Image 1 (cartoon, helix red, strand yellow):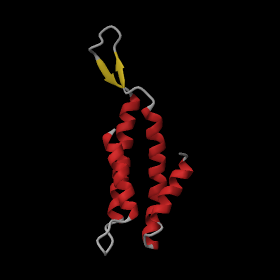
Image 2 (tube, rainbow, N blue to C red):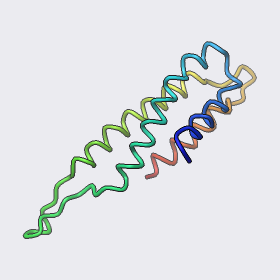
Image 3 (cartoon, one colour):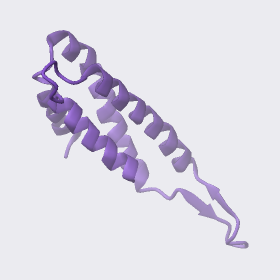
Image 4 (cartoon, rainbow, N blue to C red):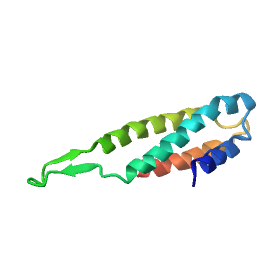
Length: 110
């Protein structure tokens, strides 16, 4: 899925939200899409560097440190979205909240 498709998907889920909330969240969605793309790139890189002379000696790579930083930012952005899209007045969860909870579970599992 391309970044444009991903953004469109998130924006489509937001259509049922109030206009002020959509305006507030639209920039945050851009950030989330950016973070997801970069996390995918980083996942392809090695996270541990092993000393060839002493295999028991290992160190984290810059990619692993960057991944941790971006993941923290991503999770924080998701939490903001979830708070902005609280349950509707009739007690049902909003479509955005359902979708974001699913995405958060996927990333927390990895």
